[in-house]
Length: 118
Image 1 (cartoon, rainbow, N blue to C red):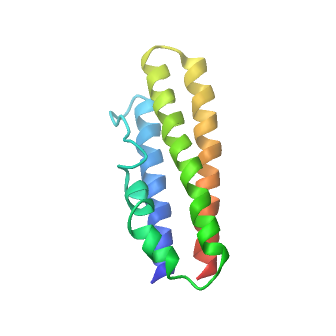
Image 2: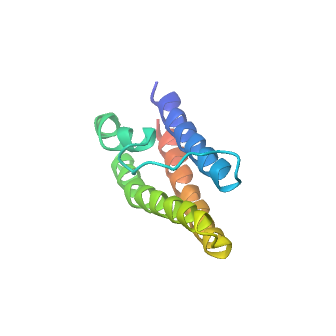
């Protein structure tokens, strides 16, 4: 049960990233949400706490808490990329996108690590 659940959270994150990418490419109009309001954020600040608390592995809580900061920074970077793109600052948008992808990688790795613990 948990295994599929962590993969669902991973999918939520990837779908969010794809929506941001579409907007940056000019094929979408998604403007993003706060880190509290996306599907992953809603899980992190609610059900995720309960789910991870019930896991046997001691480092599950550590991995879980290590998602919060990169997740918030990911949202900041994706918003910066959208804002810079809209303002015509393509170089600034690319720099923000690079940071966004680095943070996305961290989030993905933490979720996969949690998935492996179950």
